[in-house]
Amino acid sequence: MNDMMHSLDIAAIRREFPILSQKIRGKDLVFLDSAASAQKPRAVIQAMVGAMETQYANIHRGLHWMSERTTEAYELTRDAAARLLNARDRSEIVFVRNTTEAINLVAHSYGRAIMKPGQAVVISAMEHHSNIVPWQMLRDSHGIELRVAPISDAGELDMAAFEALFADGRVGLVAITHMSNVLGSYTPVERIAAIAHAHGAKVFFDGSQAVVHRRVDVQAIGADFYCFTGHKLYGPTGIGVLWGRRELLDAMPPWMGGGDMISSVSYEHSTWADVPHKFEAGTPAIIEGIGLCAAIEFVEAIGYPAIAAHEAALTEHALAKLSAIEGITLIGRAQDRGGVVAFTLDRAHAHDVATLLDRQGIAVRAGQHCAEPLMRRLGLDSTARASFGIYTTREEIDALADTLGRIREFFA
Amino acid sequence: MFEDVRDLYNAAILERGRRPRHMTKLAAFDATAKGDNPMCGDRVQVWLRYAPDGSIAATGFDARGCEISKASADLMVEAVQGRTKDATKAMFERFRAMAQGGECPACAAFEPLKPLAAVHAYPSRVKCATLPWHALLAALEGAGNATSEA
Image (cartoon, rainbow over all chains, first blue to last red; front, side, top):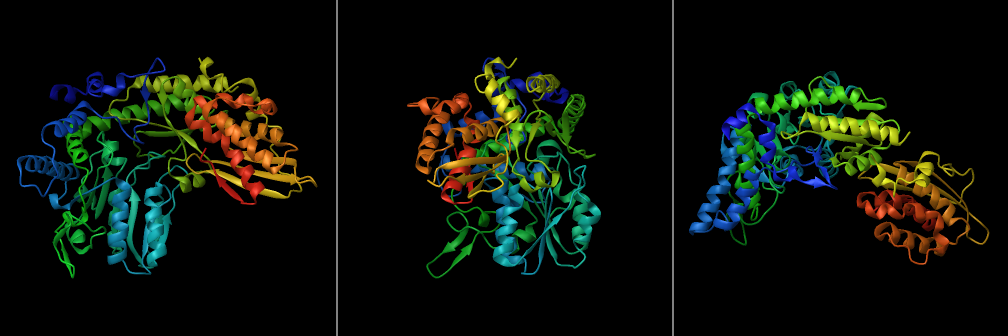
């Protein structure tokens, strides 16, 4: 296993993903939609099934063998997540359902309790809806201003315009993607954090896409909050991670009340558990949490240098192949980009492109990618998007390019 | 390579999607509504003019979307011509049943819409075909806006 990982034998990695041997309408599956949700390796599937078959019980409360074993397995995921992000302490890892919940948690708790009406939140013009709407809700309920940092036509954050947003000293929080799910652009997180901190603001990075493709060190980049979701990182749905600096999490009130998050309860008064548990009300996604641990270990075993090199080569290959096809327009030309390539075809709408690709077994996403304001900024109604994972091959990209050429002929 | 999609992407659909005959805003109209499919980005606007008896005298549309939604809008214009509001609503129900299930019971008056019958085999595309109808019905009801939830 380890030898395989170090040499990055893609065929061997693909054998770890049972679903990749599926035929779609008699054709080999070419799965190019990992940015929406990635496929699951056998290790993740077996960890979840194994937990349910051998040691399942509720956690953090049972005094019996099953509960102790399950609690231990679930809490190992907190260690794995802390290691993955290089958190200072495991107590800084809060389990949530997904990135959306992580952002809502911060908007609700930090936004309403720590931020003051009249302060501003800065997002960027290339955010997923999940990093727009919670801040709009905060704006409308709490008198927080929402500011949008513009992007260049190439799809990079306009850093001069970004910094100018701080001029009046009212920005309290920056909430920005680490990697765009449409453009593939990475954002310069270290510079963003440095600028925000120089103006007394905190920074929150949405790592949904980035953590899949490159090593994230929350301390090195100077983040205050960071979040990612399990299902894009080859793990299960229903489990994600919010990381926050301990002193910030300590100062924040819970956002949901219930079991598991309390220290003591009476009808007159309840007190909260310490972080992270005060943010984890109710029985969590136990099996999914155990599956996430296996996913993190799977990624760690391959290693980010190998993952990043593989995906950079794939992306370069895809950009070269697709740009050689007449009528294809690539969306986004950021210098620093990850394995997401959005495009339009002159003769066919993205939905028609996706349907015809699907009939050849090729899965891509088409539409607005949950980023309607970004699509408006780009002057587009929809795009098709191919996105890559650790199991993606050059041959799959060649199949995409070849089929796109034929689709263009079909709509001639 | 794409012979297996010819059921949906047939000659009539490709022709209507490419060169819609009724994709125009009416200069004078009695009602209009927009249809929006926020998940995929398709947008359509429909304009209606009524005859003195309340039936549909003229329909025009503008669409930004895929071949299926544009072709559906174009065919819809011809299918509802001269129909009353109630008859149009009944036709939509039959069209929706066909789009979802593929069957077209009692379809004699329904000929213009048959090129879309195969859309039922493409579940993610049914909303593309029904979006213009949602906009049309919203215009008939004076609602202004509609979304496509198949």
